Image 1 (tube, rainbow, N blue to C red):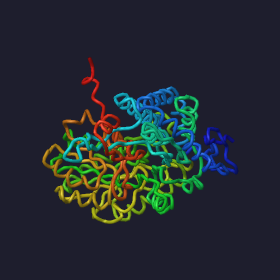
Image 2: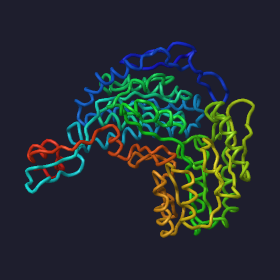
Image 3: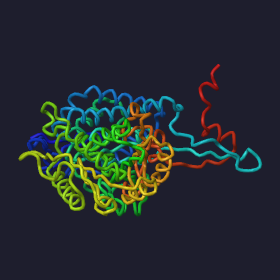
Image 4: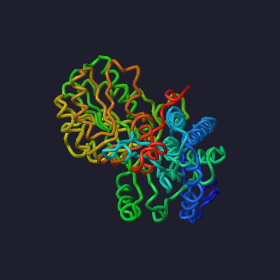
Length: 520
């Protein structure tokens, strides 16, 4: 049986013991074993700090960006074999696997392009400098400098490529070495990407480490210059927050956790309109893409009560057109859930929701005697404010229609019951309604997607995370923030105020003049 490896302290290493079986969720067949028992996390972190950190800090921002560009190209060159791994180990359709892989390479390429516009030095100026007294000789300037630690990335199982690369892009460009720990159930693709990264030679020694298996005592060896970016469940995030690495030693922690992402339909949306059709298409896609195993998937649809019957019928028909099955079969557009534990969790969640709602389509029953298949499920609530719809995220192809009176304030109250989310969407051609609703939703949302007939052919849908925009959310969503262009680097850098004689401070630490201002 194939055993997956870890890349620690500059060497490929295999863990001891039996390891965790990685399965094909369509057939239940075991594909590989993953485990990191007996491997030294302490030695790996020390190697990254001692070797990788200085090497990255010696590079300029543009040089780091060139390395990201090379990684993007190397991973893209292996796109087809990686797609096959996504189909086999994650139950992805080819389209879903491409979504994951292209998101990974696209984010690396986006940060490489961003770096090409940055100055030839290893740190960033933060805004303009300013005089600090009556004389301009006493000058102040804020700068962002790389932290002298390791960026530990604990990734979720649902995006083994994209999750790894989006975090890595920001940390490496900031000048901080990374240790990537993938979600174990789908680690086949992540381990293959790790081999591609190492084989590419794009990064200096020590800049990249990979832990394939259990975290073990990893957190015990973190100090005040280290950073952890975690994507996963709220329950695990609570355990992390209480750990001494963060509570006592001052390591940084960024969390992306559960999110009951919401859609709000405006009272102007009428059945048969272009915006109604867009709402139906987008929502059906967000429910079924990757079998609903996306942190940005739609979980709640707030719809004016008068429109609910027509929207329920249209959404049910659209979802019903999505063929579910083994992604190797012709015409399949939704594959299985990742593993039996995930199937059981989603089935139990659907049963809880169905206790307070009418099942419009689907249900908790398994679709096949083998594999982890469940139907895409749409429910309609009688009481939109019932706690069950806002208390926990059912991480599968499940959404609930919540009737409301059509006012921005009521929609915001319903969305706020979810206690914070990654993304909320508003579908309306009424500009005033969209703006008013957006302002009400913004405190509870990391990102807002305003959809209308005018941008129907131009938008990506709320489920696509773009490197230019922040990804994260308040409250239940974890309170963290990633990406957002240069904002994504701040997690791995220290903002420091530098004060002194103007010519020294401004000359060494101020923002360089644009190339156009110095040309000629």
